[in-house]
Length: 386
Ligand code: BJ8
Image (tube, rainbow, N blue to C red; front, side, top):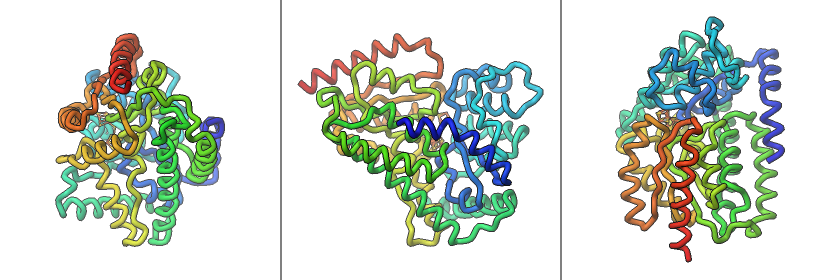
């Protein structure tokens, strides 16, 4: 993990150097934005999803308090860095928010969509219009048109032409990253996982932050280390937990840390900071724009409906990773994930898998209460294992 820490520390300096050389730096906030197109345009990208609580008071000067903390943290961080008139800043927004030249956003949940409209006042923001009923044939057609629009926007912004070969190369590289993550997760499925869930989540968080090759090299080495330790892990008898639900953005490890400090081991996350980020590869044989569109439209985010494929994916993960119990993680005011909990809990119950529902924000005031609930959940799972 040391290699990842070093790369994280050096990343801002590296982005600044790239900017000096004339490279455009794009900010993204969601899995539905294909990195491949950004790379094909010769730009670099960095994720801007806010996981810190410090910038939230800044955001609440503009946004209602009763929206999800991820939206507020993201908006507060951008405002603190890009709005020179804002006098009440926490001074704790991450420096990379200052570096981006443009944001590529996406129409997913209502809170994000409306927040993006405000963001555009501070930084150029292009919003991809995501069709949310993905099984209809017109959805794919529409999404291909949207990705072609993005392609044009990126070409204009960077001054670089995107051709099929650029996209194909970018797809191959992104697939390589996905395959490495699959390997890391395969090792986590072993009886004694050779990595903690907290470390594994940190790695996935960095997938959209670090430079692609550097991330791949660090991950390749991590997998080699994990292979040496595989089956010599420490936790054969501890309950194997899956986290399912909202993303766990960098800066907010409250729940995973509580689970693992209380005696559980997280073996998999059905999350955008987990399997949703890399599970499906992009076809390398189809026409590249179509292949991208198909793969990205298939992401089972809770903003999609119907979203039966998410349930199917969760049930498969439970079996593959031999999960004892699921912690269903919802950020406060995230209605999509909160409502989907009902169906998912029911499907898991049919499989005999207990679920602990947690709804929280980025504040630490509920830590003791969460700890008690998680402890009781893990004890119950332990009794079932004996
Ligand atoms: S693909 S999960 S990254 S939209 S938690 S802001 S949904 S109210 S982050 Fe997401 Fe893309 Fe979907 Fe993933 Fe809204 Fe919910 Fe907040 Fe969310």
